[in-house]
Length: 109
Image (cartoon, rainbow, N blue to C red; front, side, top):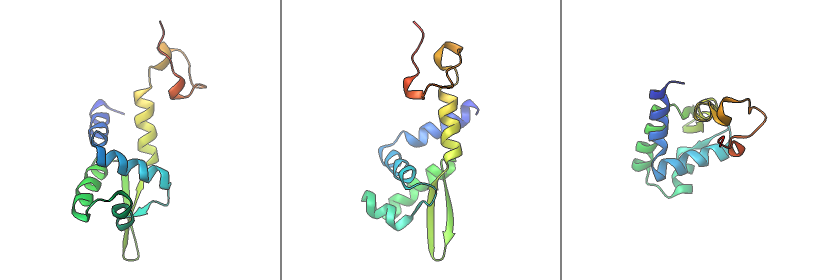
């Protein structure tokens, strides 16, 4: 992942509503959620939700698909994992920490 891509993704997540929205889609899993359900769950007006969804789609963090008359949004798990890998790329002082979870990665002192 390039720095510019990471910055775009992090900027999209650096807003409370979008962070909540993204976390809700992560929790929903690959099936995703209909826009109306997201609006209801998070208490966001449809016009405001549309703006936030657009930002997350632009950052590549979520995807949409049409099912019948509904638009279903789901997290892009590959993009999320790439971002996490990018952020923890030099974790553990350059030593192999593949067995360690990101939350356990400690800086070398």
